[in-house]
Length: 199
Image (cartoon, helix red, strand yellow):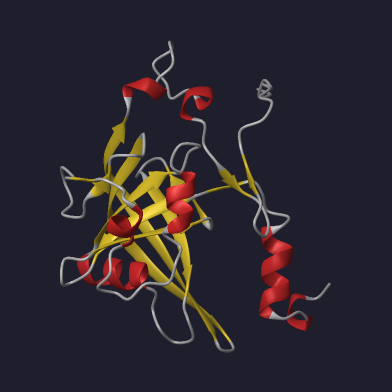
């Protein structure tokens, strides 16, 4: 199949139903007026460990920046949270289209917590959150579609003790992250197996 022969929706469906499971970043950002914005993004991943960089991809509505991208570009800061079995329903509710001066965090009843390095609050309900500063912003334009690719530098980690295993590392069976599949489908952690890496 030639991607150029497919519509935007057809490309999205093919990519999102084959590149899976995908982690879900729940991102908080703050508007100029102090409104705390929250939104989920499944086009999200780690970029580098040194420096500690993560990325989120945010599609525009026509030529209009989404609130999250606009806030990050204006303020230079944001917080990424890992979506898990306990908070996924509330995170999903924040995907509703609200006005820029309406807070998704307030609307769904999540609890803001003060960050240590950045000004943007995080949420208490997430066992893992990363305080981030804007490292790089790239835009990709194809026809009428523009995508904002945000790379953030992690400046503070917050990890709840109850997701730390006996080896001192985050235990996925305790964290219980949720993954995004295609369409309306999500996945819980299934069977876990290990493979030795070849030398």
